[in-house]
Length: 301
Image 1 (cartoon, helix red, strand yellow):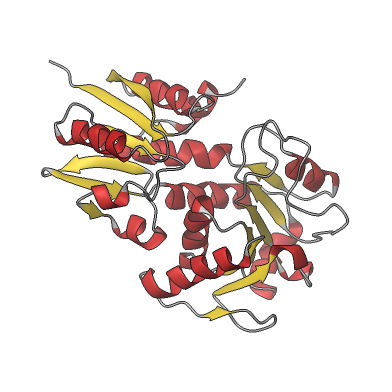
Image 2 (tube, one colour):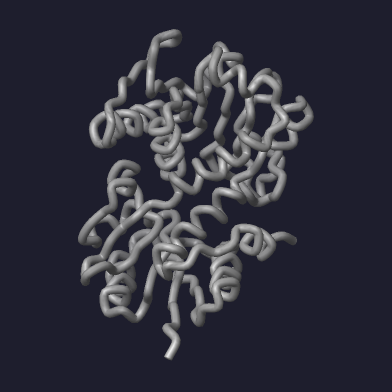
């Protein structure tokens, strides 16, 4: 008798999630029985979280994804975190191993995998030189849960990372977390022009030297539907030699991406990251590696 994989997503709200389409396509592509359900749990519903996780412990549910606002809320309810989840400080994938509830994070490797694919495909003559001449300097906008995964991925891939946030204290907390908890040494600086792994700056006094960055990552929700006419990047500030990666994927072309294209800059949304992190989670749960092109086609409309 074939195993039926019951999978799902915890978060709130979940009305516009693309995860059911992606994972249903993955199940079909891999010839597996199962379904993927949405489990909307309000931010303060701790009992609801516990009850749902107990269904994983009881092997009623094979695996769960986690999205906002619960990526950190679930941590005290788990038995173990993988090194990546521990380093990021957030969980987006839950599964049972040897009767232990494990929290993992596929956002970080999912982002890095899609970023590398994007960089390899970007028709940017300055990219190859920039990586060697100016160094791998990245600017991350935002300091929330998504930024955690991005900063972890970039810093561990050898990038120098500047975190820019409207609430400077939130950026400090994020940077301090990585200097204290990440599985490698980081240095932290708030002074421009210094050698750094992590650096923070006030979002409102943004970039004094935009030409020093070859990568801009938007890890804020600015520009997400329905606020499609908003962008996290000031229109009067050029970003002459960079590629743009916007984690927002709804709409399919954000204002930030449109503005970047109008300046002749390579730019992409986070749809590739969404697919990649889903595929990595699916493989953890089922042992099957789903074809990315089929997952992408499932949300291509």
